[in-house]
Each structure stands twice: as structure tokens, then as C-alpha cells.
Length: 293
Image 1 (cartoon, rainbow, N blue to C red):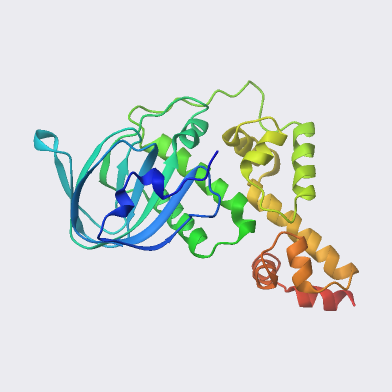
Image 2: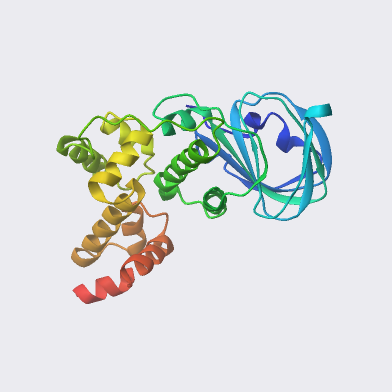
């Protein structure tokens, strides 16, 4: 899939009053485009978009109107409120005041994967509150603002969680439970071994969930569920553990510079390795090396 970008917003972020603060452009995200910005008052009509749009209001309350005539709706949306526009529908919208937002444009494929391959029809939302969706969008915005290539698996995991939450709580019809073969609770031994081998082979690289799922011959959503059932961890958490374990081995048994070890183990730089090691293990690379001396 090609990277999602500004072209997939059908002009929404090209309004004269939009003042961008940051976006995922250039990061290689195929299923999601995230942008944060300040928006000034405007009124506009937009054609159908290929992506589903979730707008998280960071400030407010501000009045938003959507639609024309008898079908028009209006609401005062507070900070933390959501505006949801399903893919494939025209949008008429009026913003009555200054607003800080995060936009998340989600590929339809991500929703299908979260719904066991079946199509999903989302509802139009105007001021809905959904704490989990709010936190997921904020986490994705944080990943954009503090981007590190090694976080690719983490971002794919967040994208899958966002898609699953939209399917579960914002579908026009309740989602059917995914069809899982009887007795299947996780990956087979062969699948898990193939995934572990791929993680170890590409420890120093950004590793998309799609590549891990392909190693297990599963869709991304099936893989994530079954991997967690097998290991008790998300793919991102598991991969991070492998990276930390390898970094500790290299620190204890060799003399390579810490910055080089960080790069060889998939961390963006020495400070990234130090931050993760302190948070997860309560120590630092220098301390690990000293203890082994």
C-alpha cells in the first residue's frame, strides 16, 4: 500500500485557516495519516474521501454544524469531543470559532481487518465522547511529535486498536463477533517460531505488523490477537523485550560503543536505548556495562 498523506484528506487540511503543527507525512504509514493543527472559523463542502476521519477536539467548547437544510445538525463540542466522518460520504461542515485538533484519517482496509475481513459502516458523530479513542488518537499524535523509526510496530498496533474501537463502538450496526476456528487460542508453534525468527533477523529495522503477520500467514488483526494469546504481550512489547535483551548481551560481552549497540538493536540512538532501559529495567546501558566488568 502507498503511504497515506495530505491528498487523502480531500482538501480538509488545505483550508486557508488551517495552521499545521505536525503530521505523519513522510513516515511511511500506509493505513493512517495523522495531523495536528489550529483551525480557524470556516464553512466548506468536501467530496467523498477514501478514508474514515476521526477529529479529536483539543480545545473548546466550539459550535460545529454539519449538513444542509432539514438534515443539518449542530452541536457545541467540548475539549475531548469527537467528530467522525465515514469514508465515501460528502461532508458539509461549518466551524464557528478557533479550534485545536488532531485529525486521524484511517484506511478502510484497517477497519475491515478489525472486523474479520467484513465491510464496516460507521456512523456520523458530532461531539461523541469515547475515552479510549481519545487516548489512542493522543498516543498517535505523540508518536508523530516524537517519532523514532523503531516505533513502527507500536504505531501499527495503535492503528489496529483504533480501528477495532471504531468497529466496536461507532459502527452503524453492531459488529459480528470475529469467526475464530474452534479451539484456536493463539499461534501454532511453527507460526510463533517464524515470527520470532523474523524479529531477530530484523532487530535493527522498523518492523511493520504486516510483515510479522505475513510470516504467520495471517491478517494483521488476526495475528495481533493470536500473538497476544500466545505470549501475553503485544508484538511491539515483545519486540522491545528482544531488543533490550540483545542490547544487554552486547553490553555485557563486548566493547562496542553504546550508541552503536543501540543502533544494532533497533533503537534510534543512545538516548532512546537509555530511556527505554531505565523505564523497563530500572537501569542504564552504562550501569549494565560496569556491572559486567
